[in-house]
Length: 550
Image: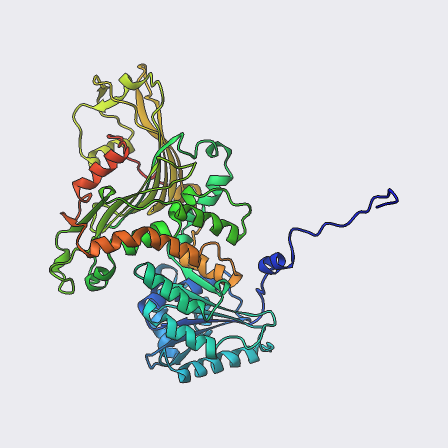
């Protein structure tokens, strides 16, 4: 430099070797062994094997590469297992057109019997897998092994230990070993951390896929695109414009013989903490824009949301238990386990300060649905408030729906009380009848200047006729094969979710927060509607969204 000449050095790239290693593509070709543990159980029969067959039928599982192994304690033959699952794989209406594919798929399935905590059974399993790999002329360590644990969480640790010791690839030559574990991931923070620690000692986080089928639903997966690919949402998606957010899950049936199992968990663990929070429905609504679509960048933003949630206040919780729940002989007579819960979460950050996130779930409700409802604030200086249409004599929903569908309007009049306009809402219907619609105030057709609530509607069955929406398990299993962890729960995300609800769960177990009785087939406790009103939710009466007919 003393000679006055410039010395130029090449700057090292920001994407260093560790970055490239982390995001380098993983082998998606070659021998693939899919092992379903708990193969004789209901989950495997009703969800796992049907998902695998659909992937096979659609060409995502190459018959020249894949082989499927069932493992369970039940002593049955290969053909016995095939007969057990056959009826769950196809519907009667399309059985004939899928008959050939079904026959070929079933021949890919082999069964191995053995206990979950003994090395002998897993040695036999490893031998069967190795024989398949040898038949495909695969060098040791270059194959792919996917273990799906369709089992209760209590046996995860011994099963994972057996897999690690006897069934993983023996070397790293481009292949991989992955495990898929089903919810529930613990019952509180302590048990979840214990389970994570036990599995984490055996497998790296990149090998663990904590599955929740809610994250595989089409409309949940659409949230990222809706949020960040549409310009008009960007300036609206904040506390300046949004008054409240509801995430609702309702079932119109009770525990139906599963009362003893359900009583151990309750609606908060079973639905709210798992599906609505831990499955990241709330996170996808509330998260900031990730720096890329890489799974870890997306999951980083989800964790930030959960870590920003302030402790839940008892006065912002309503619990319920439907009448007749304790008639189940497996449920204790003094059970306080909630079958219904409405709770308000508050996110302490710049975007969401002051906006209540209302999580609501219940069994034995008046209807079955799951949706996300974003309610916007009132229009400032509303000049149409005295023109809001109100029914003179309200009629039943059935009659209203009939008249609406027939395009026949009942007699309406101006609301002399000056009631405010209904608020704009953006609703994402997750199930049934997948749809997205924006609730708007528009002019009632006619000579008078009167307003009415209507909607801009994207109903999937109408818009995407002939397009088959994949089942959640199909999408998620395919993601595990591809190595995409975006739609799976990471350990720190799991911990943050349990930190939110564990204190409340412990207070419920101590009897400090009581469940209020409600009638089966109702909306739940009246106190829940009062809590919603207190939180700022404004219901628009006289408007019902009806899925359009084809």
